[in-house]
Image (cartoon, rainbow, N blue to C red):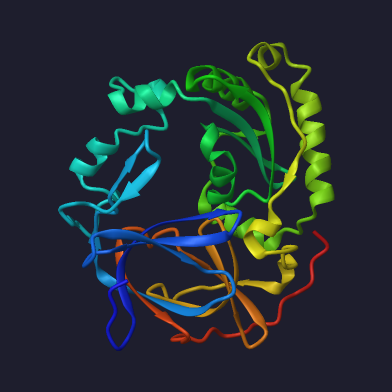
Length: 305
């Protein structure tokens, strides 16, 4: 990325996680390309600037993301992270089934194989969703699920949506979940894969007795533990994690992992969780090898949850 004596400058374009671990997507404005920055095991800091810019476009057929060719500056109070031209070029609408207009790109994408999954965040927080089959694991990791179970494989998005609709029509199955709630559960709720697997198995067994669900193609697979992708091993205990309040424009430390948009930094032997949910589209400075902000350690009370 383009650098000066302080650090590297870019636009935060998103985050993700795969078999190699969690990463940030950064748009290098000077070079006009998107860069992947792997975070786990690195010491670095991020400073948020005062300008927002379009994060770019996504080629749904080639599965490639590229920066905005016009490098459009966005209004500070806009809820959008992409300019109108890049939104049109991407043409993606996850709620296509409720849309009055579906783009040619979306129609072509809908004809690709899709999966339906149950994403586990806590015993009382199990969410159903669909995604392109090529994104399966990446989509689960991107949203920070602690464990998951694929419950249907389909030739297109329409059949997958039929099952998703049947699932979210059942008591206790969520269709959406706020990032703030995910972070709260990460820091305040004990996680064990044995419990997650038991809950997912019980939920799947209950769902398999519902006619509407089974008619839609429900077929539960073996639950997956996702901790190693985030942390390279078991998840830290929830009572070792402290949520950071304030200091919204700078963060840093030695990164031990990242769950969804919640990045975990170690400082002085303590673990601090910082939400990057609202950083997309902002200009940022990445400073490797330096910690530009210190967090206050607060002794944690033990919980039996």
